[in-house]
Length: 235
Image 1 (cartoon, rainbow, N blue to C red):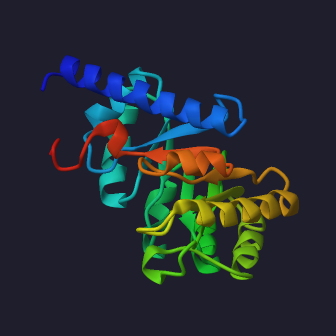
Image 2: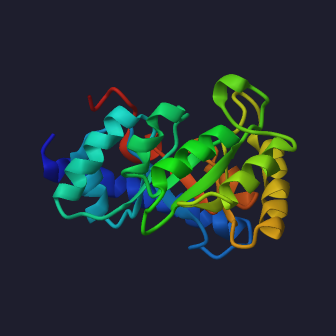
Image 3: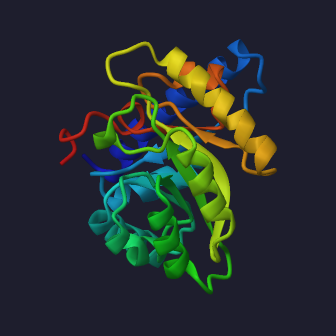
């Protein structure tokens, strides 16, 4: 597919996703522009990221350091500035690398990881925004923090050099109605914002459940398939 054809394909998908978000906002009694689209570009080439940037996308997300570190270099070499999110489970030994390009890290779920990121981000002119990943299904394989650990990790972030607590991130349980889980997340987000003024970001909702996430207060939705197409078809 030519760049022109791919751009047209992405433009059409982007319009449909933006319409879904706007409709969801209206249905929830929120302003149509209350939710930010974060394009999940993992497995897709830097050329797609550049096309999305040209179409007005400002936030993009990656989940693997090896891929993201190369892709961010390519995009920045073209003079394009985006807000890069890291959304994958992050090992402490990758903290320094990810801190070199990520503006937002959405998957912090332990004090030790917060400490590693703080060391990696020390001296940054602009702190890394940190979202704490909340477990909505108690599955340790999917990452996330729960119970009082949420506040222990929050305190660790707020006392760390180079980091700024932005709010919460969560993934809905697999194979279940996402609304009860997102309702729990909404309660936690309210508690977070009261305890830490300004930490009011809620990253929740993906291609299959963005409407439910918006209904329960998501400020950011992470969209991959509905925007870029089925993975592997473009590889």
